[in-house]
Length: 61
Image (tube, rainbow, N blue to C red; front, side):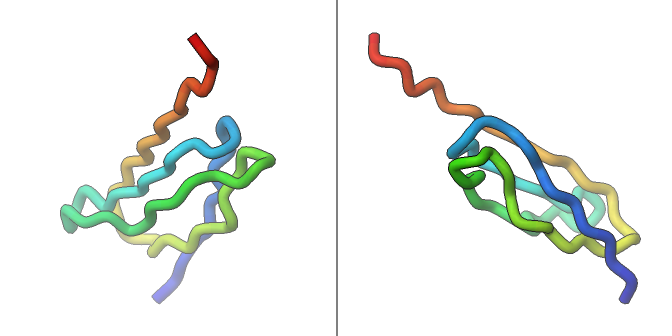
């Protein structure tokens, strides 16, 4: 199976979820590292993907 890789960049400690909409399943879920990136994530070439990134506001109120 052929794959491609993606790296998500966001704020540090952001929650990243990648869904395969064609199969209705979660393929990846983890937080970004202190630099705000994920490791390379391998995804099958055939698929319809949705990336959900949640950035948490850690400011003291």
